[in-house]
Amino acid sequence: MMLMSCTSVKRFKTATYQSEDNSLVQVDLFNAQLLNEEVEQSGGTLWQLSAGAQTQFVQILDRRFPDNGQFIEALGKQYPEVWNLSPGDFTKKQLRMVFSISKARDYRHLNDPAFRFSPADRIEYICCRLSLPESIPLHFTRWNRFSTEYGEIELADITFSRNIMLEAEGMVEGVEVNSRGTFGRNEEQAVRSRYLGLNGTLDNRRIEIEQEGTREIDLTGNVQADIALCFEGFPERITIPVFSTGTEDGEPKSELKAFLFRDVLVPRMEEVPDSIFATLQVEYIYRHVQSGWKTFQEWDDRVEFYSGSFEKRVPLFTRQEYVPEFFSLGTETEGKETIRIRARGGKEYPLQFISYPDARRVLDWLLDRQAEGTVSVGDHLLLYEGVPLSSRFREEIDEFKIIPVY
Image (cartoon, rainbow, N blue to C red):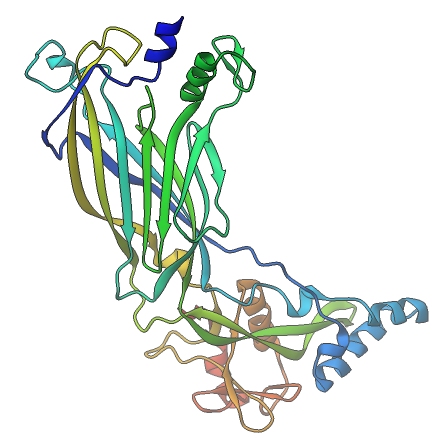
């Protein structure tokens, strides 16, 4: 019993460092998924609107709620679906990466003593560094989660170097991990229940993940890391149409009554590349069992260590994933001229919507409009090619389409 307690912490019989070999381990970015950061949305009340929008909205509520009690109740409600349709920041993203780690296997050389392969070989240490290009206005902000087949760690708001040890819970050889016992037995349980050491660092343009497997733990498999990142922002103004519903000749009809506006942040990029790539650098230690691999225990193995490293360029996400989907109205002629809005005071804004249904509804209203003269919505005048949109643009209006902004 005393002999077992003393030898249970040994990891090898003999160990030597042999050489550098960059062909023993392979790491690939198996999958990368970019998601918008979840932002808690807060609603607004009628009294947060402009004076003109308040008048239009009160008229809509008056028609919808003829009962005085319901009308008064509607005045005090929050209406997030009107002016808070989406997050106001499109620069913050969540990046979920899945790394695939594998080691070289060639069973044809199983009995060749000169060849470094045995079934007991494993990757003992691996360090992965992912660096962003300087040309992209993008940086990492914080860790969120790290998971392997052995466990999962929540890393939210950890933006500095920290050592973490993954441990198992349950039974080890019929004995509870946290149970009391002799010193030797407790020591053995602690070693057996510790799976891998994890260390991570993060700065603006680089993340680093270090894993070190403890006894009998191979680092092959898939590793998932969730990272929060952020683009440099640029303000854009989006348009939110407000419609009233009524009837005409017994048929339901929607009328565009007002425009609401919201300023949002979008990635500040002069040129939008089709894909954004990063540089993946990998360093590892490969543990080769030269003899003794026919037993389960590692303490009687004669091992040889090999180091290796490599670097590759990996795709992170595509243009469709990080560019917001705004839509405008215009023609597909040369230059793709689109409609703009002139507000009271002479300020002009692009007419762009945050969703395709909003753009579709305004376009249908524009195509069905029969009134002569300039086209205006409340205090806002629609412009096309720099002049007020009017009935003289009838042919162009019939050719208007929904055009993606980016």
